[in-house]
Every structure is written in C-alpha cells, then in structure tokens.
Amino acid sequence: MHTLNRRQLMALASSSLTAAGLAAAAGPASARSYDDDGLRSGMVFTSSNAASGNELLVYARGRDGALALQAQLATGGVGSGAGLGSQGAVTLSRDGQFLFVVNAGSNTVSTFELRERGLRLSSVVASGGLHPISVTEADGLVVVLNDGGAGGVVGFRNVRGDLRPIAGAVRGLSVATGAAPAQVGFSDDGDTLVVTEKGTNRLTSYRVGEAGRLGAAVVTASSGQTPFGFAFNRRNRLVVTEAVGGAAGASTVSAYRFSESAGAQPLLVSASVANTQSASCWVSVTPNGRFAYVANTGSSSISSYRIAGDGRLSLIAAVAGQTGAGSAPADTAVSPDGRHLVVRNGRSFTLSSFAIDHEGALTAGVLLTGLPSTAVGLAAN
Image 1 (tube, rainbow, N blue to C red):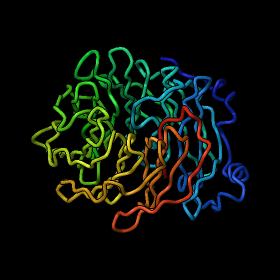
Image 2 (cartoon, rainbow, N blue to C red):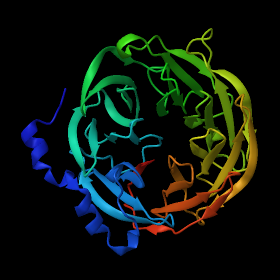
Image 3 (cartoon, one colour):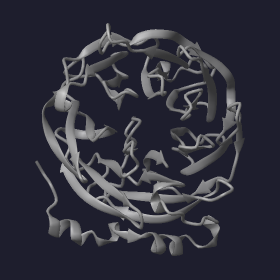
Image 4 (cartoon, rainbow, N blue to C red):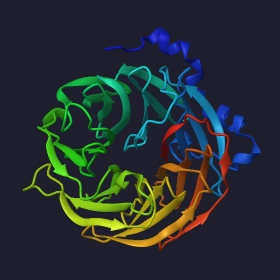
C-alpha cells in the first residue's frame, strides 16, 4: 500500500492554504465574503488530471453565481492526462469535511480536509487496483472504483483524513474484463453500493454490511444501453443516465428503487425515459430530490427531469440549458442549497453556471473559461 509519509506530505505545503490567502488570490472578481464555514460552502472543485502531476482546482461562487479560481493544490498523485469516462472523480464527504480525488496515472486517491480556515492534504494512498476513476463516501466509508486490469471496488475507512483498507471490502465487477465501469456510489441510506457498467449494460450492486464489508455482487440488466452516471435522491431512488452508445437523439434516463426484501437488487421504477438528446452521461439531483439534470455530451445541452415521490421520472425539458456548440458538457454538480447547477464542459474547457428556480427551470449565468484540457470531476458545497 503506497502512502505518502508525513515528510512527503509536508513537502506539498502548497496544499495547506488559509482562507484569507485564498480570498486574496481571488481578487474582486469573486464577489464573495467568507462566512464562518470558510471553504465548506460556496465552493466548486475539479481536478486537472494532468499527467505531469494532478492538482485540485478550487473555485469560489459569487453571489451572482459567477466562479473565480481560488487555488491550485497538488494532490500528491499523477493524472491520466486524458478523459476518464466516469462520474465521481472528485467527491465531497457527506458531512462536508473531506474531499477525495482520484489520481488515475499513479493508482492512488488523495484526501483533503476542509478546515474552517484552510484546505489540507491529509493522505495519499494506493487505490487497491489500477486506474482509479471514481470515488464515493458515506458515514466514513470510502470506496474507490478501479477500471484497469480486472477492475473492481475497494473499500477504506476514513480515519481523520487517513484512508485505511477494510478487510472484506474488495469486490470484482460482473465480468473480469470488458465491464468498462463508469461510476461507484452509495445509496442515500448507505446500505447499498452501486456500479454502472458501460461495456456490459449492467448495474452491479453490493449490500454494505457490518464495518463496511461488502456482500456478493448482484448483477442487474440495465433498462437502457450504456448506463453511465447516476445519482440518488433522499428517498433512495436511483436515477441512471443511458448514453445508448452515443447514438444521435437516442439517450434515455431510468430510475430504480431498493427494498429490504430485495436486498442489493435495484427494482425498476421508470424505464428509459427518452430526452431526444445525444450521449446523456452525467447527472445530478437537487437536494430536495425533485429534479434531475442530465449533461448530454453529444448535444451540448442539459435536460431536466422531475422525480415523483415513488421515483418515476418525467421529462420537463429536453433542452433546459445549453453549454455552447461543441462544448461537450460532462461532470455536473448541484449546490447544497439547490439553487445552482455547475457543468464542466469537456471540449470548450469551461464551467457553465445555471441558476435553478423553484420549478426546476435553469437560467444561464456567467461562463468561466480556462480549465485545463485534461480536467475531470466536479463537486460543489
């Protein structure tokens, strides 16, 4: 298990910055006053994924929704220098105290601690496999998805920012080769772990047991082809995008639920609701669980869906927002207050910002330019 020691972590001093220093770096463009939470609210995070050395990029959201770069912090790992084809490369812990970043080029995962007055790199550990592409967290349990080699998931316990492997939390996917996984994530109640597999058109899920141990893999055929990104709402409903191999105008989105009697088996609630867009891949759900926003990479658009109480989906707008011709929208994140949607655009190297109204409609805000061409992942607080 490769872990940076204390001296090596200290050598990455640029990763420990004060909130005051960050605010000074931002300049007047950020138009943001730091509150008592410091970096724990109003921030957006992505990673450079650079092959020369991965960095965490930190942006502040102004009162008008505009974003401004605050810091670039070394993760202590190496990126792949290319797209990962995944959702969840950058993830915040549910309590907002930690942030996790995959380093696909060095087979490691970095943990940052968000303190009241700063952001500190607290550990860099081996991912337990090859080419980590997605990471998730619930109640101190962290699981990393590796897609290299045979692929699979590896569980860790987060102990004050140090990730420690859990015996019995290493599991394979539905096949030894060719799964092409896209994301790993916990259900809202933390009882189930889910992986989408683009290559097999399957969902692979695991029951989360005592001390974070994972049950045997449960394999379910996806409602639609090329299941990619997903998100849970607070009623434990699972919303999954279906890119349908990138076919023009063919994308769909499905929803599932879980029950005690079915264990880790996802039960279909809403089958492949079409949006007439291309390559629907990434998705975010609002904190109130009512709306889902889907990034259509092939159409450079955002679709919006309404989620009923039982999890059934209905399309609100095939094109609820646009990110610019040829922009290839990818990672998405909704702010915890449900008022802002941020989208990382993979070909224009920009971040789009949208305001969300009480009916789920989007209003475009200021576009931020200058992202690294290799950037992956997105999280917001």
